[in-house]
Image (cartoon, one colour):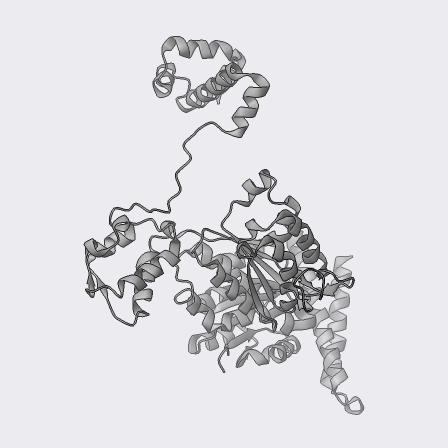
Length: 57
Length: 457
């Protein structure tokens, strides 16, 4: 149980940090030409984050 | 780059890896590895001062293996992870990890949070400290001082240096000041040297006309240390009335100079030092308990030289190197110097070497050493207190009488011997050097149930 929870929190942390890093990158980039890979990664991280929250519930 | 350190970042998330790399660029060249194999390859072919390791690489806890690998190569492994399980933290440390951080805690300000730890590793000069400024092999002391490097030495972090005169408390205080990288001054105040009547004015400053002879406004030493370090040496000698005023100044970083109505602010770090036993002074009501707790902070107890025998030859060599006229010691003379108990500590040794360097003969034999060193009779040695009678005993006797004290002592001594020899009365009797009659008399006074309990223990 403790191991599973630790893993869930680890994954939550990872996707949270990834999203934050991507957002920072987005803020610095040219908003008219947003890198599509960045957006895809942001969506993927958001989905991962959601999955982990579901696991937690 | 004087303090440059080479860093390897092992992190599978490219965005966080980039963020780390950007945040730590100012410390030196950085290599990045995304996978375990990348990292392994880089570690095998390069030297890194620091390896920042994410434990979970592509879903596996491969980072743990990298800790050992980095450690064997002489790098300092630092873990950055989202794992908070004690089992994993403990495993990481047992494998050689130096610091363990949660990514969430450091992500917002990587440079500021990891900076002190990396800066400390880059401080080449610090290594020299224990071979030049403060020569010692005392691992405990080195470790304690090294720990200070990793702490963000903000101005609220107080340090109390304890140790006999001449051990090098001032040198350590200066090192702490340098480590903090404050822009302000290092203000050294030897409290015992300031006349009591002038102390308040000198420390807090005074206004023109506040006392006879105060011809001008004078800034105090506390203000002089603004943004830097105030080193209060021999703090054990500070008068009680000043302790009260200093207590408030340390707490609020604000004080009022003599004769002034306006308070002054000064953001100083306080380092105090003493060779006195402060607990005895507190007991005698010569030192305020609240003041002690205010100045305490990190306590560093510096071992006297006579307990650091292995440092003596190192110190002798160091001082010999610094003398203009070169001298050497015969093996007997060296042995004598090593056996002598240096109550004046490093200062006494340094002074002796300086004095001997002017000796007629360049080769110093045992007979040329001062007589007290030849005979190991230090004139400064304090007479050991061998009397058993103490204040506590005196109080006890006043309250319960001498007879009661004697029977208490007998019972305690009996109890200890009884336990040690597992109830064998003849052995107890022999150890306590008492007759069998006396032994049974003591036993009679003790509750029999208690004796059975001791036996079963």
